[in-house]
Image 1 (cartoon, helix red, strand yellow):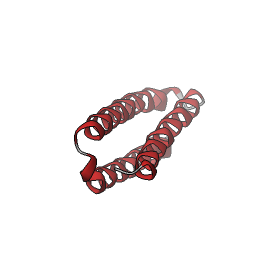
Image 2 (cartoon, rainbow, N blue to C red):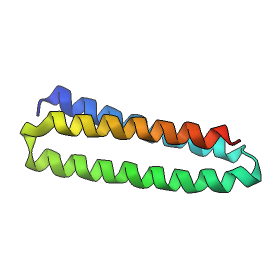
Image 3 (spheres, rainbow, N blue to C red):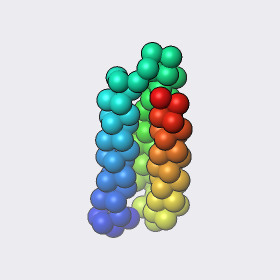
Length: 92
């Protein structure tokens, strides 16, 4: 895996972290009845991000040649997290 590709994955993971942090801030101003739901979704998103990070670092160590597969998976996961976040805030 090239340094450019590694940097792209790490940028995706950092972006996911920033988006989760933004959700946490928005949740603070959400209505009480919605806040619990948002907090649960944030917990799930954090867990998914952690799983992605673990998968990336494990993969990076073992499979330098399978970059495209990981990139696709991370991009899909990022899109899923974005949709989940949007859905959570449509309720508030």
